[in-house]
Image 1 (cartoon, helix red, strand yellow):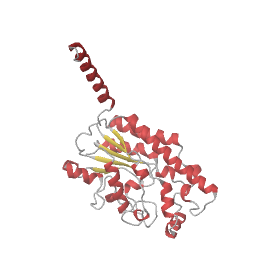
Image 2 (cartoon, one colour):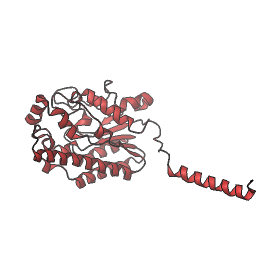
Image 3 (spheres, one colour):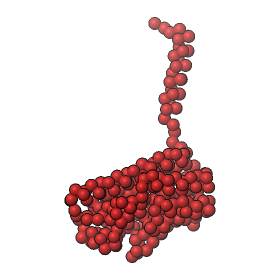
Length: 279
């Protein structure tokens, strides 16, 4: 049986309408624009490359973000390969020992430089304190992150901001607890005692403490994702690729068994760049 012209017209119109709804339901990914011609990295000792090239010193050349050591192949070097204009305009605003309360000052420095791309990795020192009780509360952490992101948004409205998840500190305990050298370093230098105190203990109190500390990391990462979403299309969160990465002990400094060594910085560069803007 043949269809009338009116019926065919109605069906065609319906198909167009449905098609437009389906297409509209899955928005296209935001265009990251051209590769940036300048960048800053915000964060703590991880971003400073601490212990990645020498005994208890910053090694900014090996920073996963703004470093210029080819062994790491940082974000900066990958960007320089596609946009030579970024050459020499890689600024490391991070500071060893920094926590989220220091992020606003670092954001101010990035704004003053007028950069086009900013990486943010902060939270390890909010977690890794002398005891569980002195960790930064989740609400305070979020407020500190929001203050810094708001400064970037107002001062660098066209810049791309890449927010990176806090690593899984409990995995550090898991891969290092069997190493006498790691346990000695953690104890001798008082490293991250909120998580790493009594590393061989299976007492319920220690098991529960580690679980609560890890949950604080999860809570921080939830806040980072939400803060980035609130920022808008110029902000991208790494979707927990750093938190979920199963790093190994040989990617950690053999001096403090806490910071990424050169191999660890290279891994950070690989997984974070792949999760970023796709330049």
